[in-house]
Each structure stands twice: as structure tokens, then as C-alpha cells.
Length: 540
Image 1 (cartoon, rainbow, N blue to C red):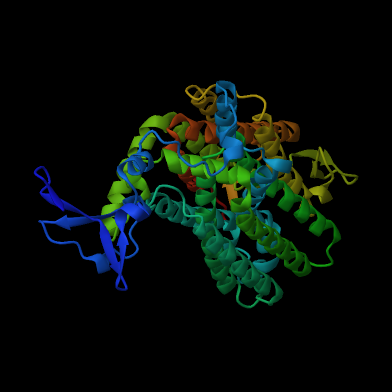
Image 2 (image 1 turned 30 degrees about the vertical axis):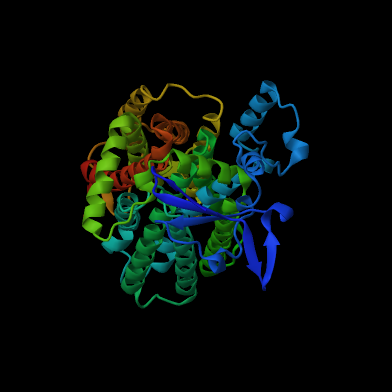
């Protein structure tokens, strides 16, 4: 028998008997009904009904019970679901899900600290080895008065930091997907290790007959190293920006700890090495070891639950279109990225100005100006009645052997900058909107003090007298400059990413790192301008 439903034009047939191998089964005796769905009044195809769902069998009462919406669902975990879960228990579970895991043993903090050491390792290694380059490798009859020797630090600074700034700019704005590309960190670190191996080979080779070629190769090495360092620094700050502020500060701490480390190694090499070549070989090998440790840290970071938690949090807060960005047209991608960064710049413009000016002033004075401030000498009459000039504060040998520059330029700057970084962990004053004021005052006060000290670069004469004839004043000025450099650089780098939404923190961190490099580059170039204003080329 077939019934027709006018609403959906479907016929339902109920067969009271089914032929099974020639045997007839009575539906009433077996209490089984076969329900068949026949569209447009067609007869059901019994052969195609093989394997029908269990819900299609049974009388109407049974089917109603089976299909009832009020029936209780099957519990896969009856032991847990049967608990009487109160509101307090649910609230506790939600709180636990929203609470980040602990940074066990401060592992993530020390990973970023290690990255900070690795970031500035190339720059610190090259500038701290000033005596090796100027007094050993380039101290030959053909290069003694050459400009590339007398102004070696300026050339090194400009080549290094311009390369760093250009590659940092590219790495900042060419981001296709929101956060920094962590793969670039591994590539940059590996490349830095290879270049340092080449630097060690150059230290072992006798280049006394080809000083200019050695100078060119050194500049190429410095440029490539700082290109890699620019990518490394920029991407690392982007990684740390999504974490609490102290992890950004860990990188800044590491950069100054890197300077302390290289300065101490330099002093030890001066005191204990048999010759400058052996000293340089071991000196640069230390850099390779440090970079390999940082390379290992790169693979360790994503395995920590602490970092995974913040990475997932930022991913959830990012707009969907940012997660699915795919650009085949790089020009279009660049302009799209610029629009996003312009939004970030408007939010953190004061912090960007602060970090730029902090590093600009620091690099105007250190290392090019500060390393050429000589010990003050006073006139004395010797036993023959002839006037002589002798050092006042320390013995003459203290400067000749290089301890004066190594201790009161490189070690002093990096040590007190590190202490300034450390202080910012507990004292954060002034706030993000007023931090630029003491940074401007710092520039106005410190730059004149330095040029009024006994600044005497090789091959140049001063245009005006030395007004501050005191080594103590110079040392104190150097301590203040270094401490404020570390303190205000930490504050600005920590403040910046926290002024934007979580989805933009990575970009803000990369933008802060770019302005940091821009400040360094500006400072290195302006230090050469300041030298031209203060000195004139000596007449042979």
C-alpha cells in the first residue's frame, strides 16, 4: 500500500512481506515492517535497500522513541560529565586556560638574552679590535698615513651600519603574513658563522704587502656581517614583542652584555697573548662559539610552552585577512605593508623618536670620538731643565699598551650601558609619553662635554683648545653617557610594542628595531661630521 504526501510529493510504501529465497515471512508474526522511500510514486527497489539504517525498522512507537529530540545523548565520558560542575568550577577552568604558563628556569628570558649577545657580536668584535686593525694589520710603510688607516673607525662604522639599516628596512617592510619570519634568523646566524671563519683566515694570513686589499676585504666582511645582523636583530625584536616587556629588555641587556664580554676578551688578549695575530685568531673564534650557541637557542625557543602560549594568543587576535595574506606582486605587498606600518608609527611616534635619538647620540660619541680622547698631559721640567709633557692620572704605558681605550672606552661603555638596562627592570621613569624629554637633554649636555675634552684623532689637529683638561671628568662623562644609553634604550624599546594592539605588537617591535638601527647609522655618520667641525687635517 502507498500513501502520498502532498507537501513533498513523496510516496511511502510499507511492505508486509518480503520474499527471502522463496520463503514468505509474515510481517505480523515477525513484527517487522520495511519502510521504503519511493520518489514520484516509483516502487521501492528492495535490492538497493540492503544495509539501510537501523532507524528505518520497527513500529511507529519504537521509531518515535528512537528519533525523539528529547532523548538523552550518549555520554562518551560518563565519569566526567556526570559530575555536578558548579559555576565556581567552570570559572576556575576558564581562569586556568587564560593564565600563561610559567617561564620555567627563566629559559625564554635567557634565550633572548643570548640572542642579544649574538646580535651585536659582529659589531663589537670589529670595533673592539681597533688596535689589531690600525696598529697591526694596517701599520705598514705604505698605509701608515693612508686615510683608510687614520679614519678606519669611521669607515668601519659607516659600512657596517648603513648595511645594517638597509637590510633592516627591507626585513621590516617586506613581511607577508603579520609577524617576523623566524626562518630568517637561522639563515642570518649561519651566514655570520661562515663570515667569521673567513675573518679568522684573514687574521692568519700575512697581508703586510697588500694592506689596501686587506682593508677592502675587511669592509666587505663587516658589511655582510651587519647585513645578517640587521635581519637577526629585526626579526628577534619582532619575536620578543609579543611577550611581556622584560623579554624585549632581555635583548637590549644581551646587546650590552655582548660589549662587556668582547671588551673583557680584548683586555685578556692584550695582557696574555704572545702576538697580535694569535690574539686575533682566538678573539674571533670566541665570536663563532657564541653565534653557534645562539643558533641552538633558535631551535629551542619554539619548544617552550611559555612562548607557544603567547604565539597562539597573538594568532587568535590577528584579523583573518592577515593570516591568509598571499602576495605574488611584491610591489603591491610593499605598499600594503607600508600602510600597516604607518598606522603603527602614529601610535608609537614618541617612542620611535626616543630610541632613534638615544642611539644617535651614543654612536656620535662612541666609539669614534670617545676612542680618540687621549689622556691629559701636563708640562714638567726634566733634570736637564727641558720641558716635557707627561700623563697625570695613569702611567704613560697604560695608554701605549691600549688599556686606556680598552677600559675607559669599550669596557666602560658596555658595562654601564648594561647596568642601565638592568635598572630599567625595576625603575620605569618617565612614562612612555615623556621619555623623550630627558633623551633630548642628554644630547644637549653630553656632546659639548666630549668635544671640550682632549679629543685628538690620528692625523688631525684641533681647531680650538682643550677646555676640559681632566681625565676624571672624561671618565665620569663616559659613565653617564653609557648608563643613560642603556637605561633609555631599554625604556623606549619596552614601551613601544605595548602602545599598540596585540596583533600589531610584532610589527611595532620590528619598527622599534628599525629605528634603533637608523639611530646607530645616523650617529656613525654624524660623528664624522662632528670630527670635521672640531679638527682639521694635520700638515705633515
